Image (tube, rainbow, N blue to C red):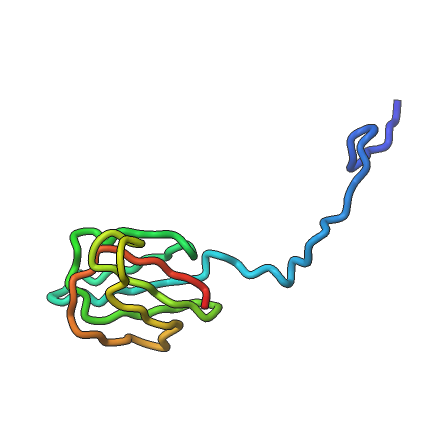
Length: 112
């Protein structure tokens, strides 16, 4: 009872994937290092277009952004997405980008 193995289920035809994989830009491409005044630096790997809260409203004096595409880091003093942003930094930064120390509550990374 030899039977041939088939990659498709009986009665179901295989379909070609209609999209170009080479044209797809990955969405989780950012890496952010927060330089906290007084120590306690932290790193995050945020998803693009997702709001994040910064634990404890740290006093940020610099930031480093690594990404495979051009991005912008949008920061708020309070909850992310609520009101006018406190600061926007374009990335990747190619090293630490110093800013005047300020307390930040949340952020979002977007493709620019």
